[in-house]
Image 1 (cartoon, rainbow, N blue to C red):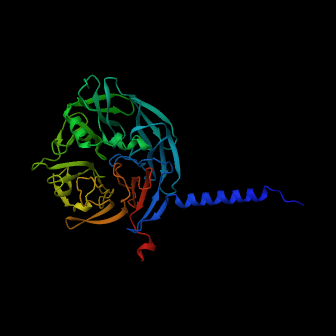
Image 2 (cartoon, rainbow, N blue to C red):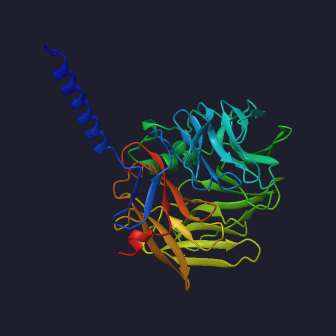
Image 3 (cartoon, rainbow, N blue to C red):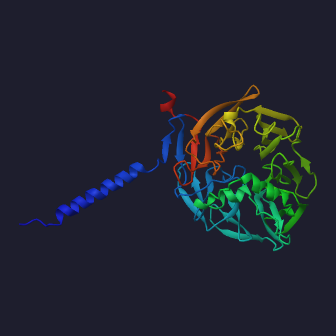
Length: 416
């Protein structure tokens, strides 16, 4: 019997296909590995390329601490932090996203309408429409008892002939998944200055989550940005006057009825800067990056809102970070390092750091080598609620993904 002439070519084709597939698999970036420079375990939490975790002060964790919500090119997804199973929860672009700390729901804006989607049932409801006399600002933030949302908006009737579009970091950094996030400017400082100098009229606002009632309570021609509700006081908000940091009094708090306006940090010298502010988990302290002056001396500074006590931890230049964050028990801090064009350059390290307060200083440990990360996308590190991992976003392997690094070293690397 003659053998079929197709047998050998077909076998060869199958073999060649297998070899190509194997080669591609070998070239594919790892989804779980031990960082050879630090000995810490890293896992990839997202599966869709160009996925993003949220800005460093925007809560993405479910109230039980088991799930993390993040943005993808197709909408919003949630990953189970124990099983790493991913569930798609919102279709289509969702802006200004924040997850409630009290109930399993995520709030977001889409085409001028505010929505809430349950993480358990995926039921979605419309909360309110932004009035037409306002345009996009920044937010969104939810208060501690799930009664109010808040943020900032620009007034639509303002003549924008001489105004510069907002470079709001929240929307620019994670609300546009995909390669489009790399909207690089030849001189980002100049656009920041121009937007600040344009004095666009803005307002802070609240929305009643149950009734949808919309209220404004602070009008300003200063650039109002980074609005954050206290994690424990449902009536206290923090916001910043955005712009060139050495020209603005940046950090402020206010009650949601417009009373109690309070400046958190007062400049003590020319070119002193303070910013990237965030609440401690217990709501008692506001932490922020402090430089005295800009680019010279670096500090992680804090103000106790109840006592007025000030804390300053010195930070060496090579350990300075674009953003800091703290664990829920307040015992640890983390930082996401800085790129080669950072305010701490030259000499700033491209690492994700763990900081442990000891004797008035911060003991630093390197967790993740970010030397291949492009800092046009800021890592924005956050502690998981159980304090065992730090979540961050990175483009170290090309498209951005959401990752987590384990704080404790594995037994294998610890014994070496």
